[in-house]
Image (tube, rainbow over all chains, first blue to last red; front, side):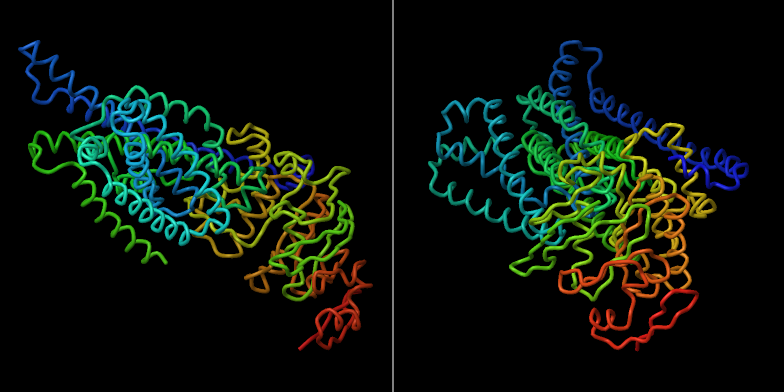
Length: 349
Length: 250
């Protein structure tokens, strides 16, 4: 420590520059903060619109009825946006690639497989299947552990090579898909009907029964993994730099992947599989905040997700009058945006 | 730092075989040898980037694996060749990462000062707000060295620091590394392919062939016609320039 100071020859100009540079950095920090405030305001606006557009204020009974339906859906969408935004940003940083989403891991198929397996082996009338919260807990546990084990092991084995990750994800998701369809084929048709209702969640048909539980899960994940989240900035420097700076790399990556899997599981349980949303929100956040600091990136990605989901739902419910579901928009816009990202990346190479 | 009977095997092939040596403190040590001789592997093992199979690495009287990773990162820094950053990161922000083992992401005043000193020391003051991916190879390498300086470790390990640099940047890099040892009193250990850089800028040389150490000692003892021929299987001429052995090969 001491020697460095000794050998800085010209102290005065460096201090003067120091001050100047500090302000440029501070300026960037400030602009990040303002962008966050702006995004937060847009989110609040979207929420207000979603809850109050088309509500009969003159009729208290109708007013409360509408609120009773809308508020739980709103909360569910906020939780989904939080999960997807956070999980996508973390996953991209862990894999060191900005055009991937955690859905490529085949997590959605694992989720459907698990649900199907529970109904298949224990029956739809069993306690595990009929108690929504219990089955949700089992999903989370099994998914979290198995996915972390599978992916954690495979990532390490393939040295975090993005191509292997994508390949493994594709293979596993068709494996899980085939296993699930085999079970469905042998299943009792009545059981299948019950199963289908629980499997096909959507933005217009949010699985509101598990909201409270999922909020608890999200908070617990954020709390338990808070130290690992703080390491994300360093992890983006690459494995060797991260180890050099004293990060227990393999353990941190395992824990982060565990968090990503659980967050995706929560989102899937609430509204069903959504593939492109994470890609869109994470990349928009990256464009808005040209920084490596994950506290801004994650917050930004979450807020953009909230605006996109809630604003989109307002659009679908009041302008399209439910003619087109939100997931269609997400997929279409997400697909186009994905192409744009690919083309832009190619140009920069 | 002391290395005893260090061994590493990949798929039945022994790349590092019973290597013993001691790193002289406060000196520049270069590891040389042909491709695949195991120099980089040794470097990665002594900096805990990869796990060793058998053997013992003692760092400051304590086994390397007994050190906490964070504590170790305050005493030993490694710079490898794979330095690609996906993120938008400025020079100053990169250098600031050097303080991570001490302060995490909350930098205090002393950290800021050390960061600024490291930037000035590497003459990056003018470009400290530029993004890393917009710099040239030589500038980027200097930014990483500045980060290592900010990390303020006693030991600095570098894997082919002159790789991909032209003659101007490479020789400047070597001068900087020499300064790290002479002015900042660091122990510098590096893997080098350029024998002449190794001969002119280091105090000790350690030569590897097929995972074993063939020669270890002060520059003048190792850089001789016979030794180099044994190591590289190529004919060498040695001329003395400025009191150092300059090797000529073709």
